[in-house]
Image (tube, rainbow, N blue to C red; front, side):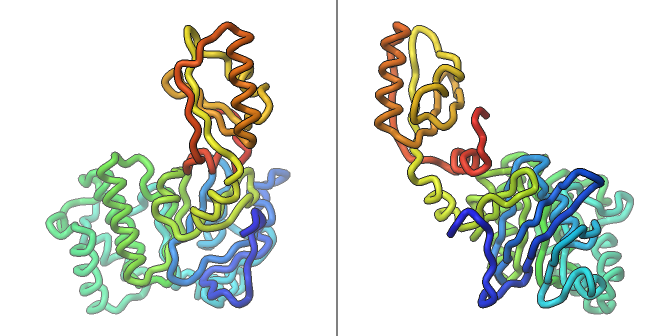
Length: 320
């Protein structure tokens, strides 16, 4: 898989994007991006804050007008058939948007009504979703009185009331504690096992690599890579990680960045974590630097890149 996003006419794309662009005046928030979300997969849209993730998802959900390009959802052109597309998708925004004064049950029933789900079917669907999301005992509790984690669960449940073909999740675990995140991850995996295609935007690198079958990495409005987690790792396979500690003091990162073979530097608890594209050259440079500065190397190790380092390499990050 190359760094450039590509789509194939032979792929079963439930969501196909071609040259999608969004301008706000002279500012281009999303710049001519193309990708395919395959039917039945969890597709990650990973990027730093401000990269264009939310703008993209808002265009795909019909919440923001497309400046240029095409988005096809389950065979329907979003710009020409927006009403049809909105019935095919479920949308979970980064901030829960349900009614504070309504109970869990009433919020679900109201969402079913909005999507035109017949009365008997929406009652049955609401009962099923409350059970699936572990919200049965909170059925009559007002939304405003739920914890953050329960609010996220109910918001996802509401987006599923009309049984959409594809579920768009915008930063689904933002603001949640570790247990809350893990519960949402479990729910996402189980929904996918039940056949729901999921489009997940996140700036959480570990979340994307843990959950997604394939990931598109976006930075400054452009897609810089598309592939499975393993494919993305192989894109920077030539890069390795050197972890080194010096004594009696830790050098400035600018000094280490000047060493040949060093791509980026991060300081973690007085240990320098270096991404290198030539391990032998970098190691020679580190040893020579220590000798020149009169420093002792107290720890030195070499390993492969992890998810965070892959991400930083793909978006061109230097220091983090």
